[in-house]
Amino acid sequence: MTPEQAKFLLDFTLPTLKRETATTAKVMAATPNANLDYRPSERCMPAGELVWHIASADVMFLEGILSGTFGKGPEKPESITSPQQISAWYTERMSPAIEKLSVYTPEEAGKIIDFAGFMKTPAVGIVTFAMGHSIHHRGQLSSYIRPMGGKVPSIYGPSADENPRAKAEGQ
Image (cartoon, rainbow, N blue to C red; front, top):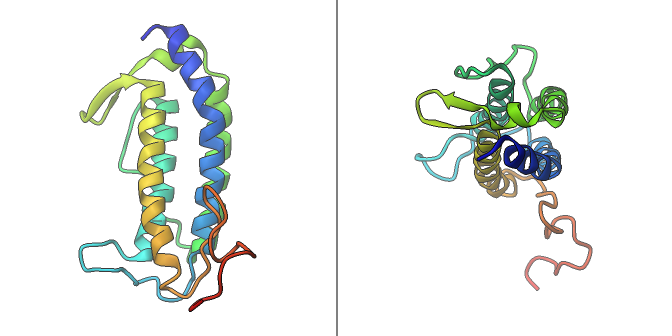
C-alpha cells in the first residue's frame, strides 16, 4: 500500500469510525448498572467486564497507533463504577484520538506498525481491525441489554425498544 493509498483509506474510514464510536458509547450507556455480572452463558464475559473490554481495547488500539506501541490497555480508574461513566470516559479518550488521526500525513497513515507481534500492518490497517473488534463486542453487549432489563438503543436502524411502530410484546 502506498502512503497515498493509506491516507485515502484512513480519510475514508474515519467518518465511519466516528459514527461507530458514538454508537458504541450509546450502547455502553444503555447497559443497566444493575446485574453487571449478567452473562448469557458461562463462556461469555459478564456485562460489566465486556463494557470495560470494549472501551479499553478501543482506546488501546487508537492510542497505540498514535504512539506506535501497544500495551495491555488502560486500567479502569477506581472512580468509574457504572457503564454510563465508562461510556463518558470512552468518549473523552476516543474523540481526541480520532481527531489526531484525522491529520495524519500519508506517511503516518501508511507506516507499518507491529501490533504486539500479532500483525504488522499500516496504521490504517489497525484502525480497520480495531473497528471490527469493537463492532463484534458491541453486538455481544447489545444482546445482553434487554435480558438485563434495559432498552436496546438504535444501532444501524431503530430497535424494537426505540421504534414507535414496533409491535407490542405478544402481538
